[in-house]
Amino acid sequence: MKFMKIGSKPDSIKTDGNNVRYVENELASDITINVDGSKFCLHKFPLLSKSACLQKLLSRTDKNNADEVDISGIPGGPTAFETCAKFCYGMTVTLSAYNVVATRCAAEYLGMHETAEKGNLIYKIDVFLNSSLFRSWKDSIIVLQTTKTFSPLSEDLKLVSLCIDAIASKACVDVSHVEWSYTYNRKKLAEENNSADQVRAREVPHDWWVEDLCELEIEFYKRVIMNIKSKGVLGGEVIGEALKAYGYRRLSGFNKGVMEQGDLVKHKTVIETLVWLLPAEKDSVSCGFLLKLLKAVTMLKSGETVKEQLVRRIGQQLEQASVAELLIKSHQESESSLYDVDLVKKIVVEFMARDQNTSKLMVVKLIDSYLTEIAKDPNLPASKFIDLAESVSSISRPAHDGLYRAVDMYLKEHAGITKGEKKRMCKLMDCRKLSVEACMHAVQNDRLPLRVVVQVLFFEQVRASASSGSSTPDLPKGIRELRSCGTYGSSRSVPTVMEDEWDTVATEEEMRALKSEIAALKLQEESGRKSTDKAAVTAISRVKSLIMSRKMFGKKLQGKGGGGEKNNGGGGSDSSESLGSVTEEAAKTATPSRNLTRKVSVS
Image (cartoon, rainbow, N blue to C red):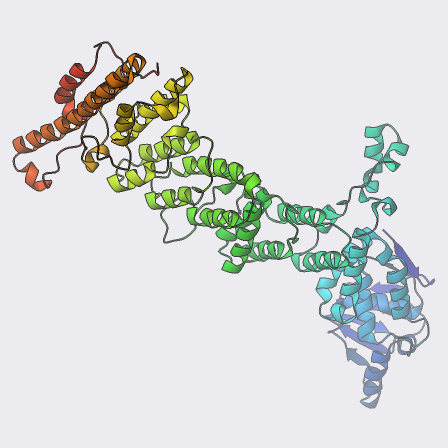
């Protein structure tokens, strides 16, 4: 730290312990000056020669035959006035980055300009600032911090703007000319590198200054960063790193995506300022940092403008995000859901509006994983789940395993979902793009509608046929018809099954029967197309028979229950538990072997 000594006489101002200070001198004092409760018993001559303000005040006291004046409004109070008084007496005073602003403001109040006397205190302070303190990185920061106490006078005297420009200019200097601030810890670095020469040769990073600026209050920090950006020397990545460092330093818990208790108004100001300062260049800040800002903005209930700005920025680089970063808690009183899915959908829509073909597969994989996580929320409406999944439906996934996991997780956690919602949700999946492992899980999944199970079995048969050398597009007519009767379309060429029945959940016996029929079709295919078509018709009839038997058995149970058919609108029961005896008999007729287990393996 740099300092300047002015004057040569020893300090002879004493205090009597009762807030009274006096100059130890042979001459008696002839003026008393009151400063915020402290009294200074001094002499007129040395003060009048250097202070235009005291000249005016003392001229008034002479007319009233008074020898006491009050200057309680002086910046810096008794301490700063004492420094100015010592200068008037020629006593030694020491100026540093810590007291120079207070002394400069006090000297301005006292009118200690060149018009009062050449080489006055203001002139000497300005020389010290420009030739020494503003050339020092650390001292410039300290001086800027001290100006806040003396605002607005420090602003009027250009002290704040001079400090800011000095700091910004040094941050933009070519790193080859920088003596990095790590020099204060040079001894430790020398020990690590075993040589002071290695420390001197150590390359200075472009962001060497970011940690030091974290000491500034947000108002000053904003102005310094704006000044740095206006010079156009440093790239957006360096500015972004500075903003990230400031957020982590000034906001407790911010790097963990939470906002700990404290001055929420101050936190809000910091967050909104950081968003406002974000560089325009894409990838100047990481997507993770942007999402942390968005979480903070949501928690602090900042304005929509700030939120929309972040949504646009995140949408530009969504492929960089992780699932954990996207899990933004909902803070809306009207929302019962755990996560703010609507906000994530806005980000996805922003991403989809941009031509980013190279990263779309990464994003769709990310959203599938995100859907799996939010599906665990028992309060998540099916409509929000489906809407988010549909927002990326235009992206062709190479595999649908991730989407299947998400749908299965939702069905598992939301047993009360309606048939319509379940149907719409299952339509999101393409069974042709499920892996063998996913197919094996799906055909045993009692949460899926029967039509989905049929589709899975059909496409697994297609896959098996293709792997054995058969031509997939040239599958026998019967197999194609079996598949068509279990899809969300319709087929006029085969016996139809009621639409609602396809949306019911298959029982274990029905699954065994379906697997058996598909296996039979495979055997028939090997023996010839004609017999295969005949087997396909048989398989379709069996499937229809199984479903109809369930419906009839449900009606019988309702009839025994006394008016159940009337209460339920004659719709029958969909409970697989109540269909055990009927479906078991049907399964026996359809299954070649009684020893089939529930676990389905693809032959």
